[in-house]
Image 1 (tube, rainbow, N blue to C red):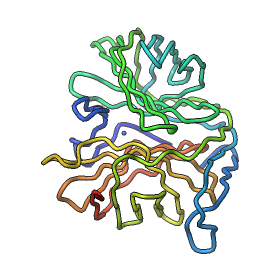
Image 2: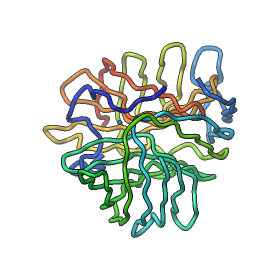
Image 3: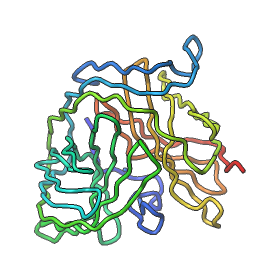
Image 4: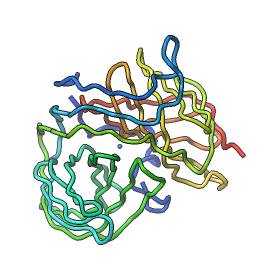
Length: 285
């Protein structure tokens, strides 16, 4: 069960802050995740993979909200339509299956985070909306990024819909995919401790319980040279042994040995790997 009304460890970490460029929160089937090499762990081939493949997803997602909306972006994003968190989005002319899994209030806005699956990449998008007291929803913007490039972007969007609250179960069906590993981020960084081992020059690892993930950061949000140089690391987390591919945002706080993994979700089971971690981190020159 996955509920989204929860306390975020640090209020300033809520994704959705336009001032920082994003101005960005058991499986019912068995899917195989295959790579041309295994995880960097004892007894497993530690050569660097070049691709990530996962079979179809067919699972249920429980939330305490439901969004029904139809609208359109103005550039990369075309028409989109969701009924109770499940729908499609047109990106670069292709209509892709998508699902909403997070609701995040931010200042006067509410944003909804969702995934869309393409054959050659994964898309993560955020719908920015205004909601009145009657639950009527009006779109204003959409942010989007993909695992194929360091390409976070914002574009105006229009659309109307409605939001309701309660207990909802959505059936999520997604196709298989076979994608290249994400490109390295232009900013190099090092993260160590509490399960994390990221060197900044190649894919790292993250140990979550008994499971080891290979970590592919593909987006860095924030200015590491600024006085308040907190960072967001957007990454894929791949657990070959358990056939999981996850997305999550690791928030790193300047001058503090602290990292918070938030807004994660894993295919095919639609569970998460969220958690706070004591880490040392630095920017590499």
